[in-house]
Image (cartoon, rainbow, N blue to C red; front, side, top):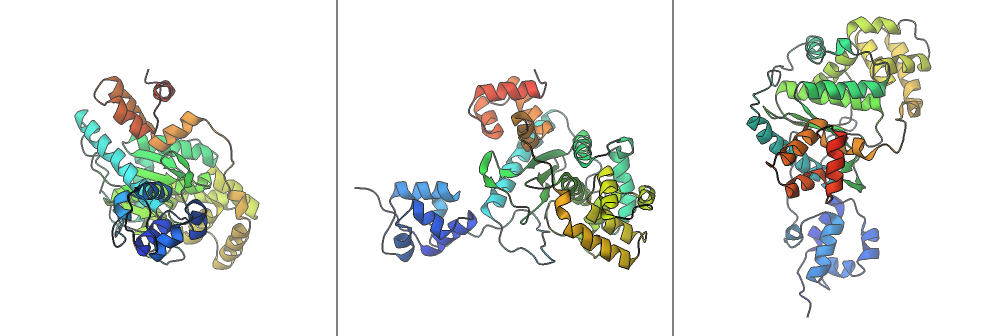
Length: 377
C-alpha cells in the first residue's frame, strides 16, 4: 500500500506561486491536485516527490503545515516604478543560493592561494561625489585605455576589467543550467555579493541588451565599493536620493564621464543619440539622463527625446544568436571561478564529483572541453 502524506492548501499554493506555475497547468500533470488542496485526498510520497521537483521546492517544505518564510539573504534594493517588490520568486532565491555557494568555495580557494582583502572594497560612501568615485573606478579598471566603440565589446572589456581586479563576474538568464527556468528582468537585473576576498557580481542577461548589462555591471560594482551586498533592478534614473540612485549615478559617470559628453553636442535625432550611446556602451536613455543631469540639454528637449527613445525601445534590443556552449558556460560560472575549479580539480584538491556539481555536468568530456576552452591544459 502506498504511503500517503498529509499536505496543506497554503503550502501547495505557495509552491505553485514560488515556481511561477499556475494551478491550471499543474492540474494537467497532477489531476488530483484539487483534492489535495481541498483536503479530500492526500498524495502518495512518490507523487509529492514529483510535485516537489515540478515546483523546484524541497520535500521537507511541502510537508510543513505552513509555508516557510523565505527571506532574501541580501539587502533588497529593487523597485518597479518606485514600489518595492514584496515576494521573491523561487528562481531568484535559488540563483542567489547557487552563487553564494560558488563564492564560499572560491573564498577558501583564494585564501589557499594567499589572497588578501581587496583594497577598493568598502572604500566609498554615498556621501562621496559620484563623479569623484567614477573617476577612481575608471582609473582602477583602466577604462581610459578601452577602445571599444560598440556596447557588446564594452561588455566584454568591462567583464575582463572587473575580473582583472579580483571581482567574480557571472552572467546568466536561467537558473543554473536549466533553460526551462528563465530569470525575469522585471524581477531583478543583478546582484552583488560582498566578500573581502571573493566579491561577486551577477548580471541577469535574459533578454537584456548589452547596454543594460554594462550599466548593471558598474551599478553592482558601486554597491561593492560601499561595502555590502545588494539585489538591484528597475529604475535607472539618475536623480533622487538613496543608495540605488547613487549607484546609478556612479555607473553613468563611469560610462559617460564629463569629458565625453561634448560628443553629443551635434546630436539632433534619436538615431544620433542612439549611435553615440552605443559608442560609449550605454543606452540612449541613460545617455539622456546623464546629459540632462549635467545641464547639457534643457528639460523640454530632454523630455521630448526621452519619450521618443522609449517609444523606439526596440532599437536597444540585443542581437540574438545561438552562441557557443562553452562561452555560455564560462559566462555562467565566471572565467575566474571556472578556471579555479578546473585547476583545483586537476591538481587533486577538489574531487571530480564536487567539480561536476558546480559546473553543472555529469560528463568528463564537458569538464575536459571546458579546461581546453579556458586554456588550463
